[in-house]
Image 1: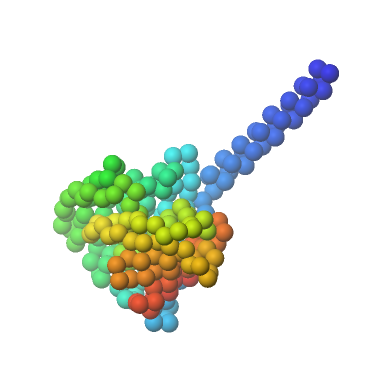
Image 2: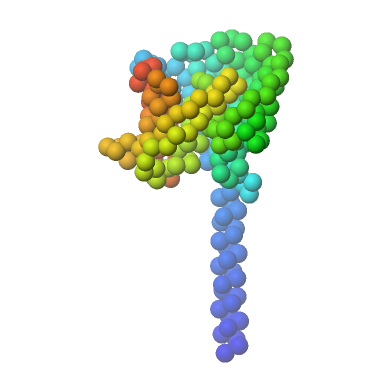
Amino acid sequence: MFKKLFFFTSIACIFFAFCLLLYAQSEKNPEEGSFSIFFMGQKVGYEEYSWQADEDGYLLSVKGRMTKPVRMEIKRLYIWMNKSFIPTRFEFEGSVSGVSQEISSNLAGGRAENVIRVAGQEQQNVVKIKRDAFLLPNPVFSPYMVITKKFGCSLQAPLELSAYIIPQMESPFTLEPDEERPCTLIMKLGPTQVELVADETGILKAVNIPSQDLRVTRDR
């Protein structure tokens, strides 16, 4: 009897250790992908992203470039979040309309402490925002995946949320499920409507902004 109990206990321990190993590997290996950006039916740019999870939360990193409607290069963009998808830090280096920019922000308790360097000039500011505001640096599209990661296909009713168009301003928006298209979220940000299409796991597949004739589609 003791030998059988020892045998089953050993098997259970091995199985538990194997599950922990698989979980650790899934946390270590990032999700990676790329998006193509289309403006007025013409491909005008791309973004490549990496989504990394660890014991503290998530890290979204992005690089890419776009020629229209705004000329932009993303050398590096990082958004750190906790397990509740609340942003804690933001970094950006690149150029907009040919002007080099660097932004670094620390976020905590509804405050964003920003250091902004534009064309060699530095300024600092502190902005009060909602603690759970989503960071949406304009005109970058990969950060919309934070919304689809958080809600996936589970949203049943409209929500009033907030976006920090970092580092300019905070803007409220409404998020609601599309009743005719599963795993599609309709985001109403002022006069602009943004369609976020995801899969069952919350992976962002497409971003559509009809009023601006902008379409972003996932390549891989």
